[in-house]
Image (cartoon, rainbow, N blue to C red; front, side):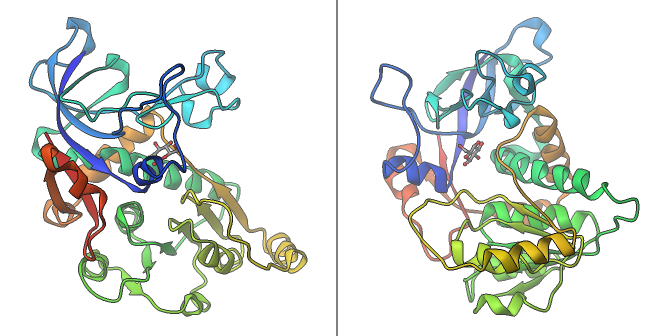
Amino acid sequence: MLVRTRTIGVCGTDIEIIDGRYGWPPPGRDRLVLGHESLGEVIDAPADSGLRAGDLVAAIVRRPDPVPCRFCAAGEWDMCANGRYTERGIKERDGYASDRFRIEPGFAVKVDAALGDLGVLLEPASVVAKAWDHTEKIGRRSRSWAPKRALITGAGPIGLLAALIGAQQGLDVHVYDHATSGAKPRLVRDLGATYHNGDVTVLDTLAPDVIVECTGAPQVIARVLTRSAASGITCLAGVSSGGYKIDIDLGSLNRELVLENDAIFGSVNANRAHYELGARALARADQDWLSRLISRRVPIDRWQDALHREPDDVKVVITF
Ligand code: BGC
């Protein structure tokens, strides 16, 4: 399919790639076209693709490894077992930040026209939809699993979308972030959730059934690892950079996790089913609230401005 790019989201991963701390160009090349959070308009699609010119689509990021491993063979490329998967705009494949891009129809997800440019939130929404989907699957290890309270650490786009899905499930949602004022606390409160900031010890008495860790910050991770209720589930969804050491009493940590049947797991990326779950969550959300997640729109000819964080930024997008 041929797609005209409308909007590209910028996230922490893009900044890391630009800084040279992450990312891989296509083999034999020394440049990588960025852009893995996309929204475009179909120019031309095969008749049997189910898509037509004018449809809005978000493009899937990951491609299965060439072997393929058993996960990739089953369309679960998000679980790739040999690390040879590729990712558009991140790992060995050009991304979508070009005026037009081509894509295999199976890797384009139709976006509800009513969502318009907010469809650029589908990629981050797919990532948190997967985190919640796996949390729920792990929860079902017990027949009595009935979570009531969730804690989300980090109120960036990923944390806020995780909070949105938690609120849609009827959970008592708490969000922790370092921001003391501005858009983030308001966005959290407008979901009906509780906002916490300051010293991370404020989380010590919450005892959430589910924790979705979205900061990737070692001090926060170390604190939340033992803070869930007994039989709690902690999903680590933030990709950290290494090099920051912290003292942990591993024996005590292990004892607490074992004696409480706590589960801690990592979650990355998303397969097509998660994009569809993400699309449903976005469609159900208050559109006004969603539109406030996009704090700045930067035209492509001023793309550099999109790479600097301003104090009240949530999601910055580049418009084409
Ligand atoms: C992207 C994912 C990707 C991950 C690791 C994230 O920023 O949203 O799609 O799998 O980075 O490369």
